[in-house]
Image 1 (cartoon, rainbow, N blue to C red):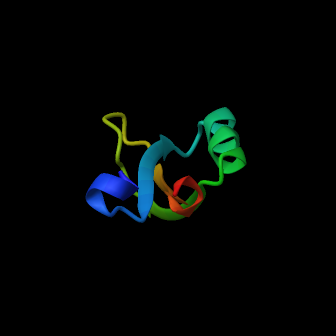
Image 2 (cartoon, rainbow, N blue to C red):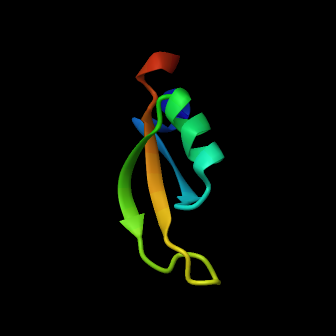
Amino acid sequence: MKRFYGAEEVYLEVRVSNTPAINLYKKLDYRVVDLIKGYYHDGEDAYIMARPLNNFE
């Protein structure tokens, strides 16, 4: 993505209650950058997590 599109970061959304996934993403250098209230159909919030692509040059 960085080479072909010039992307600097990648993003994902994860349920705030999904602690195992959040911990995994943090180990992969993702960080929480925002919160989306009521993102999921059941009303649960989501974290937006981001990771820089500078390690993949």
